[in-house]
Length: 466
Ligand SMILES: C[S@@+](CC[C@H](N)C(=O)[O-])C[C@H]1O[C@@H](n2cnc3c(N)ncnc32)[C@H](O)[C@@H]1O
Image (cartoon, rainbow, N blue to C red; front, side, top):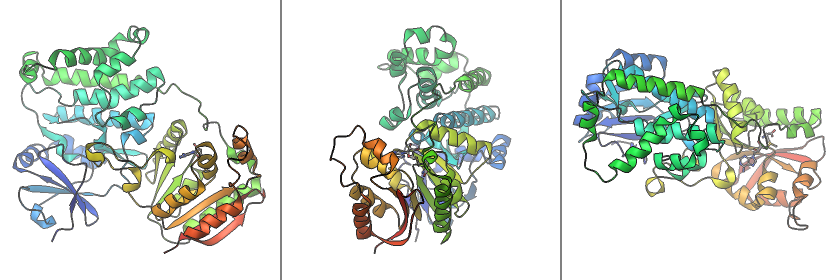
């Protein structure tokens, strides 16, 4: 009896489905899908991508051997990605690197007579800081005159979001989270002011032409495929488009250089010995048991994520400041770090799923389970700035994780006093160590705690009560 269950996000390709179970991922193909794969799988471009790791490790198996029957006629197994992340949790550099991978694979396979059925960033996943293409079902033998089917999707889900950030300084994440299909050409054309459109006209062909085509073809039954063939959509023309797009993507850069937290070090408020003690406390707590996955919430520059990584298999490092996360990503990438996954996640505004029935792309809490969570120097920001009560925060942590390392700044901590400066007197009177410990003890058992030598912060290692 199969232990597999169908992935809730896998239904858009009618020719294949993804199942998860038994510690692996299975991609099953219908008869038509299987034919597509058979025709392309042995080609050098695919084999090279497999060998380099740009394409996820894939082993062809019979569906019966993994417990699948009709209508599946062939199947592949893939290793589990340690943590599935979505483009709206990536930073600018992550989306840019994913776009470059998409274009590279599309060009290399095109030269081998292979077409990609789509171009969605949901087909790319990050292993730490390394992007990897995971949709082995995207490849098919290219038929004469085939356009690049993923072109519009590439624009909506990669190019326009990158332009939005690079040209306008507007974060793309809220748009990609708002629509699972990305940013439409028409929206993009309206967003870009004419002053930006004109000097960069060459680069904006992809916006302007698409928007025009969208309007023209919206209600028409015109056969765009035969149009493309007639227009000479041969491999050379497509390759030239892909090459140009590579150039455009390469040139788009992150405009913003500063953010609330990018110049931070709240650590500057710690006296040196407090920081050493905190690092030792965290190290001891993480190392006290084998850990498959650690989540570091409010990771900032990742100092504590790195400590956790030394004593665990994988760390998901989350922060609500996209610039901070972008910097962390680029540092990790330079080190070829595949153990720490940096993500842009605002804990006060996350959790819900998006897409079909809100389940196509599940919320961050439904995609993995940490063995231990670190919430260091972050709960006072959520409590005082965003008014999330300490009790609610602790409820969330109790639901999320069996173990927690959590830092509580006292009411007289300099950062707490600063956050309270512009708040009405009295509304955060319950932000005290005593109240925090009372709430903590209702939900967790304290394994160890330490007053940092600054005297204004206490750090706890706790386990969830049964
Ligand atoms: C004081 S720093 C702590 C950095 C690190 N954890 C440490 O202990 O040194 C606080 C970090 O929390 C992040 N942060 C604040 N509110 C957050 C939220 N709602 N969700 C996720 N991160 C948040 C900030 O962006 C900032 O990088």
